[in-house]
Length: 339
Image: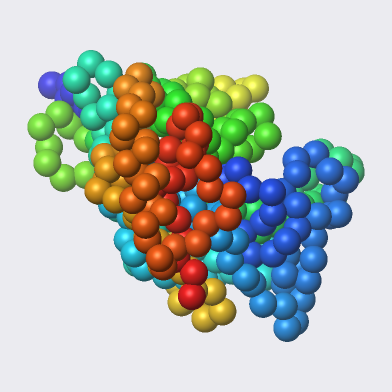
């Protein structure tokens, strides 16, 4: 008797924040510059270099969280995710783990369906390994090392590749509307890691998943999910077991192949001692339920939010203007409290 399986998908979306400088130093985030020109002792992890958090990155990250209906914590904590990779000069990535910036949100994808968002946390990007520039060698470009990112982690509530595509398109629309990122997948400003597994319909527990890394288009996400889901179903039907591992999608060959085993236990997470994010101050209750595309905020709501923000004596936010567009609306509700 044939068993009917269902697809279980959770997405991790990495979004580059629209800042002029990197997360922990003053180097430019400009795309397309000559390799290794936008670097400094902090990017290169030279001895004695200490990171200084970019306040604008915190503001944009909090704005994204509010736009997606998440609860922004007043305090969050950075951690060091320790692992080796050639384009990670420090030997660890500054990220967030047990105390992220924001948690618990939802995103409507149409058809009466909403997908839960587990968390949004801040982190820095790694450098870039270039495999096709020199024959027999891999080149390293560290211009991207330290660029500020947010990672948006969904609940495993997506049940098809079409729903995954709908989720990503809705997410991109909101991030563009809130002016958090340019979301250019061609330039790597939005990248997707897809976790997928298969289980018999009606089975309550999840089965072993695999993660498809660095998908750079929505169509590639949908194609990769279908291919990997079919493999999971075939393995289960044959009585085998899925090995948890990281996968890569080859768009030219239309195949998913294994890259490495998933060893989260080996990535020791330690609190980052030199980086302490400032508290986030949410200006008024309106910030808890921000408007989204298709339902523009009224002028009175914007004005009330702006007045409430300006009345706080413990907030400082340079360049604040109450303009009648979405970016200023979210900016008026989110700020960083300075010491």
